[in-house]
Image 1 (cartoon, one colour):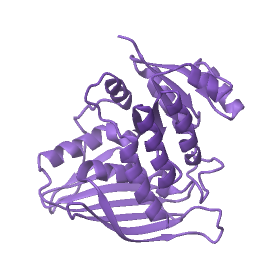
Image 2: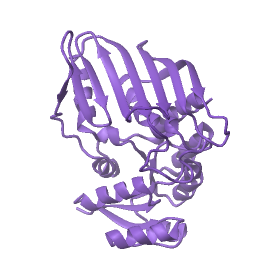
Image 3: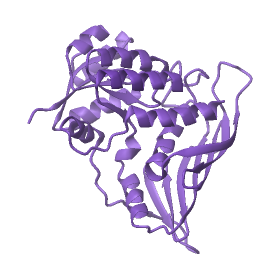
Length: 312
């Protein structure tokens, strides 16, 4: 069986994570990588002994099964247009685009070209998330009465994520960088959401991204949703996605920790037993016409619209 092949645009921190995943996968292969930062490109190429190309045209000419976009959001739409024009499938980093207008353009060009699309939402392939999904399917939590997301950052950007755009109002901020993961998760579990009200705070410097957001929303079935984010505060970073049920409450803490509580007892951390397929497995299955857990551009556009609304 032939390997699923990838070419990557962008060799930043997240792009390097994707490289590691592909290199560790027995049925995946990297044809080439490209980055406008030639020094970084060569550093990564040397580190992993993979082929670096000097231009986007050279990268697309390798004709991989999937082209990964791991660049700042404003570049996603023009890159997707070029990739789709070559008839190549597109795997994009989140958020889908700079805004919903660009995102709608990405959906359109991919559809017109008849290519597959996927997005890098790693939580979808997390054992903890699949444990929550199974518990919801089995109605272990009872009736779901509320969903909450709380994100706290002592500083933004985070120390490990320093780059020229991550703090900018144009492209950066935790609403664009962190919220999409959890909004997509809510959509996967509970369907569409409707943002009822929100307040987003910004610093006086108009070039800098948001410092806080509070929002009330509800799912299509009427479950209340609370969204809360704050940066520049005196505490450690903490992320909590909470699903409140009448029988149990499940909490996804700091991306991978799964906690379960019942009435009158302290929450207990549990080790998920689920072993879900990976994103790379899903990309492979998609090409073979099999059922695959893929977040398409169409779904990414829904998340993009909620992000745009929160940024207003």
